[in-house]
Length: 217
Image 1 (cartoon, rainbow, N blue to C red):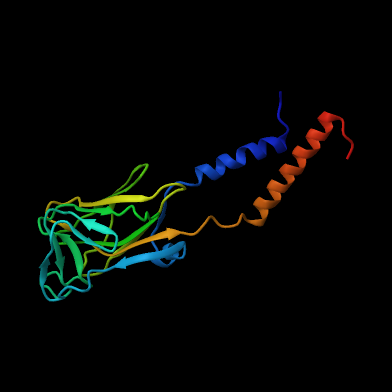
Image 2: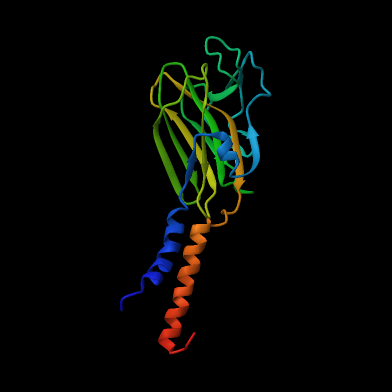
């Protein structure tokens, strides 16, 4: 049986919505924060800006447990690095690992990224309850010049569970600041064109059914 065009459109539309529910990535913090309610925005600023501060392992703060093996905060006044703000890293130049609390769960995760020493791109893995998303060889600045933002909004039914950040140069340490967690607002109301398409499809289905049943309009 050949489906009328309007019934095909109605059948395909939900599939399009489902495909659109994948992870959304943001490079602009304002655009990211406009997507939902920010619950935590933590920047390691309570530590001495002129010192290296070693933290317990794990170190839990603002919804994240940091577990690098050797947690370290590098103050903004520490030579020769002088990052633009206090930043978190591993003293062993290893990956940064963070476990995101899941009670309550968060479907928004953001952070400022950079590196100390050497010159390196970074690999970033963000994990949700449904799997991992890998972003390789991200170009980020040295922390003494600035930090780049990356924000992620999970798809429908997903929430963040962890993240891992690794430098691609053995002499560099990835760093983070301003780790942000939140909950996205409900999906926006469909655009007028989408609503018109759905209305037309629904009307077409009604006419088709009435025709099949022999009912006059």
